[in-house]
Length: 206
Image (cartoon, rainbow, N blue to C red):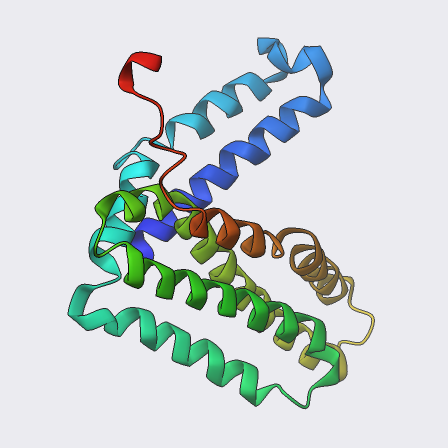
């Protein structure tokens, strides 16, 4: 289940970050002596190695979700729900838990939409596939950040108070939850928009 998510989401994100790093140099980002243009080229090609990322998204939606009656997907949902329930009384993790819970709900809603629309019309599944994969990536990373935040909080409370490593983990995790994770809402809206506008133009229009 996670193979296309890990491959495609992380390489999409890696390329975006390489371009952002290049942007720091301004126009000099294109000059070979700084090395950033090589990083951008290397990151870009990772998006087509081992299958283009669009194909990975189609594989996720078209094959991986329904495999074994969706057992892997629902096992993941159950694991996330159990973790959120375990941390319900932990006020120090409220930010992470609320973000994860909302994002997982968006992913579950997107999954329901695909089941209700994608099975009957493959165009709907295809149009939603990349957005769905990116949403899945965000939820998975949110879960990882919640686990890291739990570990960091426990370490700070048990003899590592003031340790900058754990403090920075919490700050970085908070940034992800507040600035990146809300994208699941926009992705859900795009998925629900369906395939009609994406396929509205005739081939001659291109």
